[in-house]
Amino acid sequence: MANRKIELTIPFMVTREDFENLMVTALEGGIDYWGYVEYVGEYNPEKGKAFAEWLAGLLWDGDITNLEVMDVECDRTLGYFSIDRLFSNVNHPDFRTPWMRLLNGVYDAYDADTLFQSGVFNEVTYG
Image 1 (tube, rainbow, N blue to C red):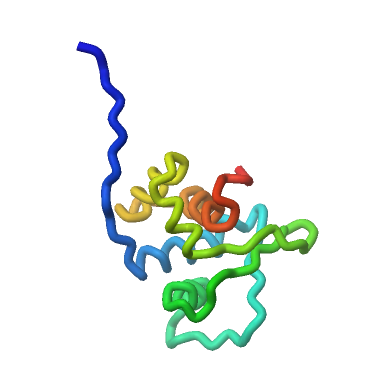
Image 2: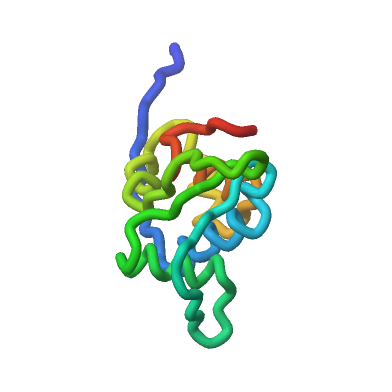
């Protein structure tokens, strides 16, 4: 019997906590070799929230729609992170495994970096 290739789409739910974990891991270590987030506004954290977690909340709640991502070497804009772009890439073959790792709690900075890049570039541009 010959092997068959079957494409499966598995539905899953991304929670606010999942998204916050992704953003904290990406912004506090995953992307720091190629970029950083430029946020022009007043940092007004909720009690006990780190900057990256606070920004994730603003994106999740729709208070801001994107984040400007700057080149770490020459301070030029590389693109804009969008939560809509991030979620539109959930079933893309390059991003399925990092999503599954994140949702199972076994992700690392590389996975967070990969997913963050999908929200900026629709592809992995660095690394």
